[in-house]
Length: 298
Image (cartoon, rainbow, N blue to C red; front, top):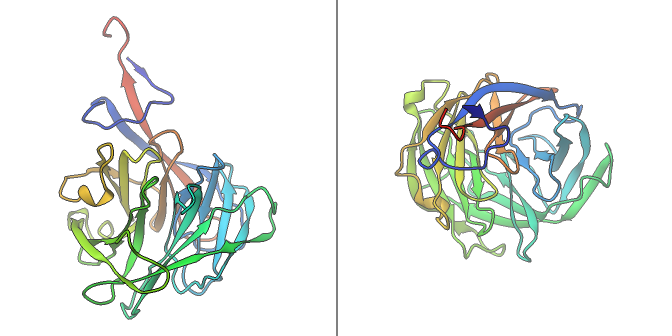
């Protein structure tokens, strides 16, 4: 038997010999302005580039860095405010290109009347070095929950359809799943649709807080993370993100520190990359490994 170095993405129902390995540190991220990485997204336009954001009481900036942890500058998002940024995802723009979706969705006190998802064209991280740039003007998609304010840190954006999902963060371990309707516009506040529930209470007091989520570029696997674990679902070809929440996920332990916040998939594989809070945060990887049988069956 041999271990595939770059396994083709696949689900365990089809590739029963595939599993996640242990979490390993990759590199520290060297950006003195990045004090609290609250999300993580892998660029699809620039492979090897990652985006992150900081949360409340910080400017509305996107931070870019490479897989060696070197800063590639920060970009002020035009037309945006940072009340409590907690998530960043890559998805489609309205013209068939690539956009970043920034989730201003945090609400620890559950007092905000509206949250905001900013959609902005993905800036070119090669233009400013380690300096500061600006994005084009962001589109603000304002939303409200149907039953009053909720706190959330996890957001999913379908890579082709743009379907957007929010997952609440609850100390009870029982999170709700909401969808931003496809007809949402920047001219009005849109009421989210409740599409499912997620029970992570069995993961214990430290593991029952949902802090981020991600979907593979081929839209075939979804991960939701807590401070201690990654929960992973298969997504059938062409299926909506809202369709998976009655299924039981695979649970994988994450050993990326006590304040692990962000998670994303490496482009071209199902490897998980994750990051935590704090000055000089560490980027971790949890590899997706497939055992391949030799031709003689050994």
